[in-house]
Image (cartoon, rainbow, N blue to C red; front, side):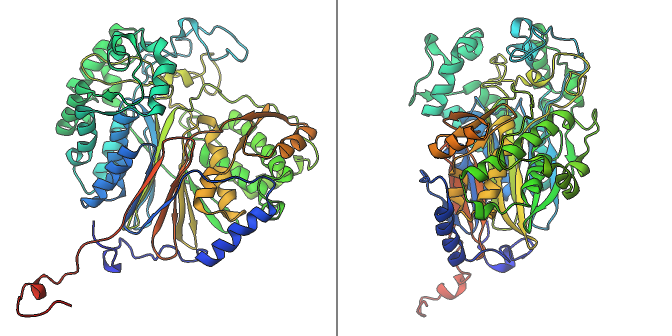
Length: 592
């Protein structure tokens, strides 16, 4: 990557115009604590750099991203390298046989969403599974858990095609270059983190049913422990073949034939034709405003962009900054708007190819004005919303920016921990179990149909101020993701928190029943909320590890991750030597 001289910046947009200066941010940071009803201390430290920033949920993935930027790549190269690396070091969360969405802002100002979400196979039908119940909490379960564990739970994947398309369209490096860190870590191995060890132990009972995946993660019948060396030789060979042959190796090629032959024999609906005809979708971002900040979010079937905009619109009429962070008044209002958004999400958000999603109405200020009077300041409302609780919180996210002005915020997943909890023999591939997200009951908006995309809470978001990037953020956490990004925006815009505080601050969530409140919210506030009629449920954490980047007035970037996952920000600073080789080459002259 080139040094940070203005001549080398992509569009020279001068990001940071209109940004708070450091002195103003310091004053606001002190001020929010003076008004707060709850206080907290940050557990991690942020990183600031000028030439690139990568925030991912594993240090080796962040290192892969930094390696690409240091080798002349841009944020897209870095993001794809990080995602491939995560398939190795976070195999329980993400894989090439998964799905996800990326929001990309290019240095020239273009914005694109690449929808790589998984789809239902062509042979899938609304009644492909037999539900065990018509009521909650077992509404989504089916006989034999066929939509949840094993080959029948496997959809048509989008990740590999989406990543390769993003690289081909917007990257500067080759597929072989960006895949090299992942291949290296798979072949040589890496040390199992406590987080990965816990996930293996939690899913050991299911993985033990498949001898192929058990051989890797349960050697000798015992789950891999923290610190164990995890080598994935077959997966390294698969990645190497993809690096040579490209994504068509899976989408209709020899690898795809190997994968579908096994899956079909094991009871899957996925065919080679499904892989051959899978296509990503370019979507238009959902754009809204909040107190002078332009919010750029992802579009349906991802729920985040629409419902974050809706919640911010509802709160814009209240002076949230004056009410204070973590106070009973603020948290009550937040819970109420979360309930309204949950009701609307359940009723309207699905694959727009199959369901008419009224995006413009939902994100309009007029619609917020219509709904806002329903919020009572002194009692909890009686909304009841049932969003699909089976959407898994086991996801991963990368937020990456380079010194040229390119930004990528992307959420990817296998759905459940280790997806379908099987492995394709001879490949090291763990397929997702996205079929679990389709309603097994026919006749509903989220019911199973051939080619339908799953609906997700993905909320990759970019904030703009005065035409320049302000922040980029995202996280895992299923249907709790929009609520967490919504709260991050309040923390930055209303409460004036610094970036580290904004990602680590205690969170809350509700979908209309229990009000999940992290323990960091003061007990007195939880008691007050209960007095207003909220069914308070104290929890250890809401959603997963957030990764965010703040774009500073001086052109630098600050990256931060929170305590809820293994998130690690890494930056690229420094730069190349001054162009004075000819001057220095003369030994008779002194150097400056």
